[in-house]
Amino acid sequence: ITVKEWTPTEKLLPLEQDASKTVPSNRPVVLVTYGSLFFATAPLFEEQLPTVVEETHNAAVIINLRKSIDLGSTFLKVLDRYAADLQAHDSLLMLAGVVPKVVDQLEKTRLMRKIGRENIFVEGEVIGQSTLAAWDKAEKWVAEEPQRRVAEAAAEVEAEAEAEAARKEEAEKEEETVVSDTEKSEKTK
Image 1 (tube, rainbow, N blue to C red):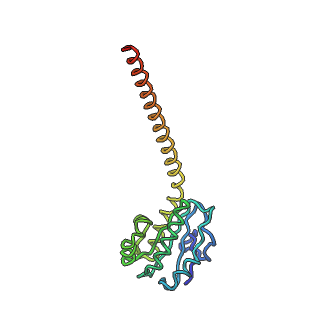
Image 2: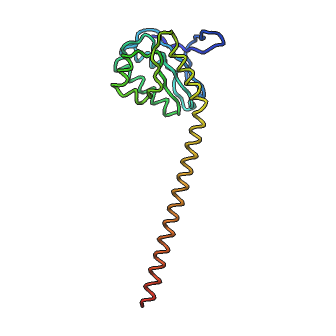
């Protein structure tokens, strides 16, 4: 098995080259496999995948599974680990060229849930159509994801500030209640 990287060009066809050694940040990467994807080749496939490193963030890796009709549990575990590594670095795994039988496998193994149905691109009649669709979505995701994370962080800070204000207000009410009870107690003496 061999893993190659496709890079879009100004022309209709992509440039094919050896896959990067590491997952580059802030851009999509398309990986294409040549050879059979089954349990015996899964370790070799995993070995050839670009490594997710500490510096990797905001990347989208698209693996084109064209012509793969049965992935098997060992290969699916490789995809599961790779998806988890990418997610731990605020990055995304997408699968293109997926046939319906593989979609079923992804659903049965719950890998579909981890990757996200919206990140699975089913093979169509036009060769490369699903890869181009994945590329378009990956470019958009890479561009928008940092803004989404900033918005989420801002919302978290705002929620924390609101919670702190509510705690402070509650403490002040408690203090007023204690002072009021103390005053009542002194008046009855």
